[in-house]
Image 1 (cartoon, rainbow, N blue to C red):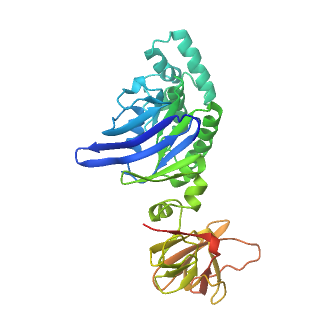
Image 2 (cartoon, helix red, strand yellow):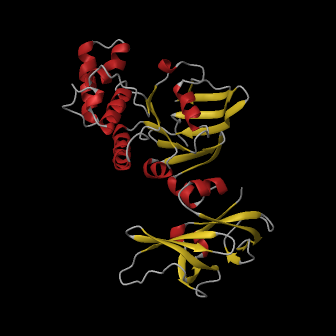
Length: 353
């Protein structure tokens, strides 16, 4: 990154007694970037967000926002604001007063606060609902109120801690698009914590994948999905088949059952690896057909999902998932059919632990 980052984290560690929640991570978030921190529960992503917000202080390391060290500053002295999963709206206040609350606490006069709050309510498409209370609104509408309240103080960085987790699937998908569009219009950095892989892939400019307090990979959604740094990232992002094996040379891996398959790999011969094969990159063909990269098996199950079918293919030592688009006139295969699973060499990634 050439421009000064919105958030710069260097060697940040957070310990709670003997527990290391965040373990010496380095991270830069660009100005105007939609940045997601992704990982399973307990991986350290929320603790990292809380350290950026000032709700937790680092045990070690440096934390800068637009070049200013803020690691020991309280939340109200940082140019950030946070939206939580619970929304944390005041139930006794209407929408306008909820949104204007932060301005009033900062000494903004009532008239100006209400005008700016009204402008922000319009930005999140809630005009006409200023007099409603949170209990009179849907989950998606309450989420927009929480966003408006966080944005009305004009933070340089907006922090979002699993803000869509309480919404049903359809509403969550709609809000993903709305959040991304809102971030684009505002042009400020959004730092978004989630455990939902699809959410991160859909919304983010870049994703940081974390596990056990460690930062495993940072990259664009395409980089994370297509070129995972290790087995955990490959398995956590989307759905994949991981075929254990050993490197033979730069273009061949010997799988656990002794089958040799084509796969580009940079690891030395003898390295224990896994071949990462996404279900949509594999093909099911009649048994014995296909390329040198072929594994024979039997179809266990067939799942119809509208525009595609997902086959579970039973091998001698594991099962594979293959997703194939439905083609007009093509007869679907059935459970019990002997088949071969095949793929192109550039369709797989070789990963280690």
